[in-house]
Image 1: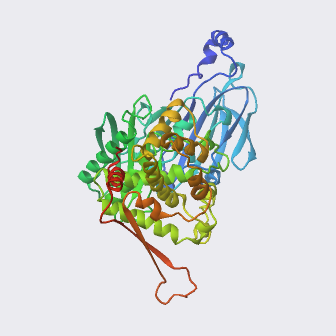
Image 2 (image 1 turned 90 degrees about the vertical axis):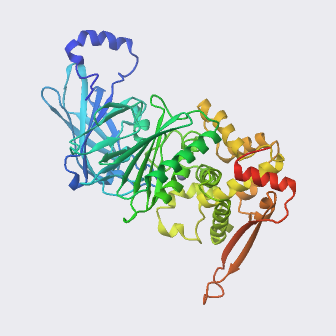
Image 3 (image 1 turned 60 degrees about the horizontal axis):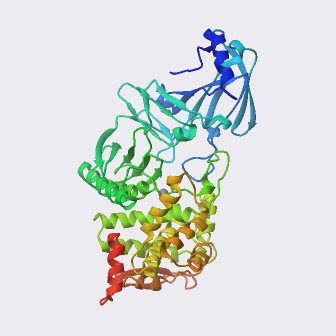
Length: 531
Ligand SMILES: [Zn+2]
């Protein structure tokens, strides 16, 4: 444990002198200790040590994290207490300010000159599988730290440390954070700390380097295909690193990226993945499924973690944070997952066409497409926690329509530039213009501006009709640019009510005699190349 401020009173006069040189509050490290001493109880025992000037501090626990869903993590807290553990511990009073915020006040002076360190202690229960949750049991722990660690609202920018203690002797811990000792990590801010999930247990581990970047893979599984996972991850990371212009995008000091996998062929797995700044957590029922998710999650290194809508910055842990751009952040990321799988040879081109056709069928099967735009669907992401919201009559998916729009945008840009530019150029330009300058983009308008800059043409109609609006997408018009044809067949399920919504089946195929231009654009689409 590191407490930079803990010994201050020993040399109080010297420290006072130094303090005079430091404007405003003293920046000392907030430390967390997380005890795993009783994993069978599913309780993380947290001690948060907060150096404070004076006798008061406000702490809060996020209402949401990982998913765009308010899940009120504070409902899981048990036995919260606070004190100042100096030579004689001084108790503190805890006053709730709202469902997730508390003001803590010391009963009296604790350390000389009121340079106090207040400890907040609580247990928090988590026993949920998957990358969006946290879990502690006798087999392992997986932790999204924002789901268990409180923060001081005005001090999120301060550096911080977390140490896991009482870790079972056969377990190890892994997190894509600078290590400060066995099972302890540091981060430059609370936000950086909680954007790095932690696995603790008896996992397997592999490492590889690709295109100058170092990768670590943590696998929690009793049945997985090591050579398939390793070679596929190499193909995916190589393809996406090269697409985005080469160079290692991961943060210093390690400039490393970690994949956390939970692969359970025999288990009850709700598959999914969660992106983080320098890592991802993925759950899947097979190695093959895990690889497909990895192609999506790894592209988030750029799209959403670094090429990021302004509306998501800074993170507001207290309530819903609205953006209309999830069709791009998520849907276009899915488009790049399918491009990557095809372009790296993990899929055939027929699998790529079949996946696109399936996405189109899925959108066409949702009556809500006639009145909910993909921007509205992005904004309404916070309703996805309600089952009935996800019904075809009520909503569309910004993943689904966003993926389709990503492919259509790529084709439209190739059409506008005679295959000299593509959506790849848009992503690279957004990375240069926004991410690498420390800037964020302004929703769909920011995306449209870069599309128009790259293509040299107006895309006002495209964004008005298909992004902000609910016009039917003229798939044939877009696809024919690449010599592709789409056949839509509608059928009513056998014996179904004739009034019932017909189920659309799309099939995409290459036309027999493409023009030279159509062939060039199709090759460009499939290879990720331009003329
Ligand atoms: Zn995603």
